[in-house]
Image (cartoon, rainbow, N blue to C red):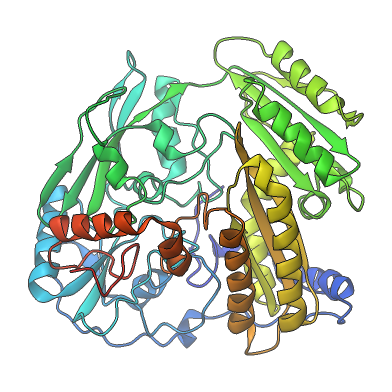
Length: 532
């Protein structure tokens, strides 16, 4: 991980995108896989070619910000499927340096009928940070909290820290390190996403079991709303009515701007151990993952990869067709872990599988040499690979969900058949992979990736059709539209079907109470026709 120039159209830093030679090699491999001949390596989009419309508003005078074309282009979209036009670019990008700046900004937006869109780290893959507020607003301001990124206070007695919402993952961990503490919340977007963004989207993180969502790590939240400061009490637990924090968790910026939170931290791990198990079939791997999830062992890593996922991420040299690989890992700041990993491997071996020798490590982070290390590096590199595939005209995306164990076989079959049929109809061919990102005693969180050849100029429509087919299959089989990618604008039609109708009315009422002028991230989570 390292700093550099951020890419205005793709994931991450420009310098870490695959170079021309790597893209050509990838185009040859995909062409052979699809049977279409080498895919074309198109020129990378240049910022000079982006059409940025003229700003429609004069920004508030006392709030730091920028109306430059680079800043506006980089705040137009999150990181969902690439679009090459920037008609919805925000009119201005605000960089507040205090809560007073945010209060002034929200008052300006309410007074001038300007949409306020909290940007977080800009890593939303569901259209959650886009400036497409519609024609009923005079303009759009993107709110970037990158200057509010400090660890303000550490409580070593209760193992908690008060952290500003604009802190990105690496900066947050670097500030906790001198205290020998860590949050250990590592979503795939860790390098760029922020604490406030994690809370606003109920992000899934490092732990595959037990503490899987940021929800589990939040102690209290502070948020600036258009009607005042929302501050929940700092408590380890409470039975006093509906929890205020639950209103903010997953609220995706529709109520206000999260400015800071107390979060539960832990001592940095001193012991780590990892191992992997290979299964003749994916179904056997599912049963093993269920056994571990229901054992009470609570591994930090319990991720099942089908053969396609193992191939994409270079795990165990890539599993043979039909095989699956289960990655297991434990970590602790208090005790050695041999009994835990050996019991987990016993559960896996019940299927007669081949298990690797456990790899034990001390306090240092993983530095390669085992399946878990290969997976970890490939996991963080995957978004760069997706960006490269888009430049070749490939139709590529991911979607994730959660369901109960009993429903998973039918769900998996339906998703596989539905998405393959959609790719065949739209693209002629394509392939689909699956992995479990998190597992619970009552069910897994499957994560799917689809890749198909696109038709020049039709890629966005082909992607949308495949995504729609997958989303319909999820809801038809009792799964959720998202486990940790949030709702945004992309998932709204299915979220509206998933939520209880009375809850939808309650959400609209809360929106009206906290944001009476309806300026906060319009078009997200609530029906625009029923919102203020």
